[in-house]
Length: 143
Image (cartoon, rainbow, N blue to C red; front, top):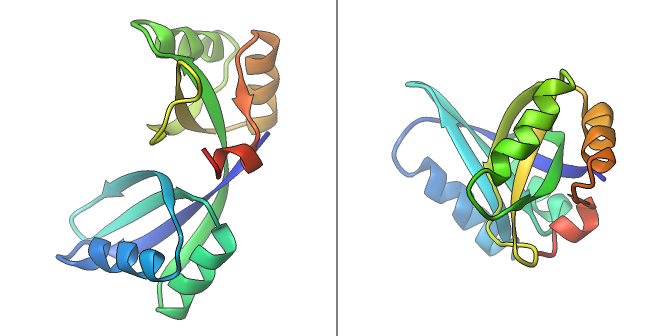
């Protein structure tokens, strides 16, 4: 039920993000979801891509520092309160959401969110026990 997210650590300077996307384009890697967090000196680009191995190899070969992290893709009702319902369930169960970001595409009539939890196994069990759809990693890469 997990998906693997690639984190790219980069200096916060003009053109660096375009360099990453150019490398991925040359490697024929499609970005499915992304989030960028930054400070004045550096940033962390978090990516879900269609081919992790090609992305990691291409970026490492060009000198980028890469990390891989397990995340969870969850279908969220695409209506007011849809995300709140999930966050409320997790909060009541004591599960911490470290961060989250939106996926590029919907799954059926639902939005898809990528979550990083402090306890992934517990979070997945709680989500499934509440009849929420957790999308398998292999499917996430092809959405």
